Amino acid sequence: MTNTPDQFLMQAWKAQIDAGLRVLETISEGAIRMHEAQLEAATEAHADLEATRKALAAATEASQVMKLCAEWARANAGKSLAYWRSLLQAGTPEAPPQMLNLGMLDSAYKQWLENVQRLYQVKA
Image (cartoon, rainbow, N blue to C red):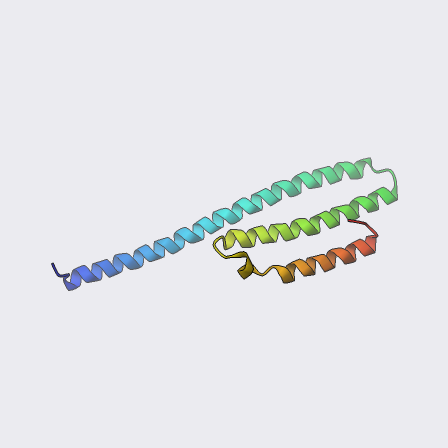
């Protein structure tokens, strides 16, 4: 049985619609994964903020406050990198790690962290 031009057109049209639906499905799945990563990071950040707020309320000396601020900044630098990495990986789950090439970003954060630690004289 040979396809008529109408059948051929219908098959091509359905294939085009199916391809568009698969693209939309992939985009939706990526958005869900990114939302989950954001929600996890926000929940952790909220818990950290509450703990820091309580520690600041209990601090009685300026040196304690400075230490808490430096520790909070240092911890957030690492958490920020982890957050952006999780978003990147959520958006590109099939990509092999070598394609993501986060080395430059890692070294920039490490350099920034070292400078902050030197500024506040905090040891990791």
